[in-house]
Amino acid sequence: MSRMLIVYYSVSNGNTRGIARQMAEYTGADLAEIQTVQPYVGSYQEIVEQGKQEVDQGYHPPIRPLPFRPEDYDIIAVGTPTWWYTMAPAVATFLTSYDWTGKMVIPFQTHGGWPGHTLKDMKTACTGAKICCEGKIQFDSSGGSQMVTDKKEVQHWLRQIEKEVEIK
Ligand SMILES: Cc1cc2nc3c(=O)[nH]c(=O)nc-3n(C[C@H](O)[C@H](O)[C@H](O)COP(=O)(O)O)c2cc1C
Image (spheres, rainbow, N blue to C red):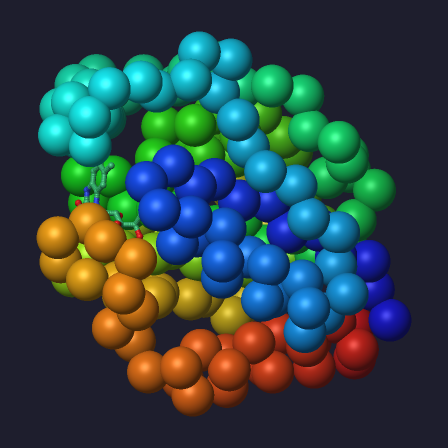
């Protein structure tokens, strides 16, 4: 049985947080939330615009220290909302801050119908990791909290991860 940590970022509705919590229930993994030092403020539309500028500029905002050290785990699941077809900048800060050699990374994203190249970018950011069980969960296209992906599909994916933790 391996040690697993779930690290997630969630801003708009808690969509990614909800998936991360479900994953923690299935796997018994530790759970940690990424938080930026400067919180995003303003309306949804203002955050969408700020996010666009940050993604376009490749900005990696400073993030707060996590309560757990990824170094201490064998498997690290990393969850992000999709921001302009890629991971949220705060998740890019996290992924580029560690050496992933020898770790198993489970990247997952929530999105509103335009998932873009998020998972590919996440994999590129954690060179050296073994990638497993990627997840893509769709919520409604207006940026809301209604899950579009079938619940059963999500449960099937979570069971796969549960098995991975048991056998590794
Ligand atoms: C800055 C910003 C950019 C977004 N860009 C996209 C996008 O490119 N594609 C997409 O499908 N959804 C996009 N969304 C919607 C979110 O990815 C989606 O609502 C996500 O589930 C929110 O997760 P959260 O509640 O955990 O923050 C964007 C939302 C924000 C705030």
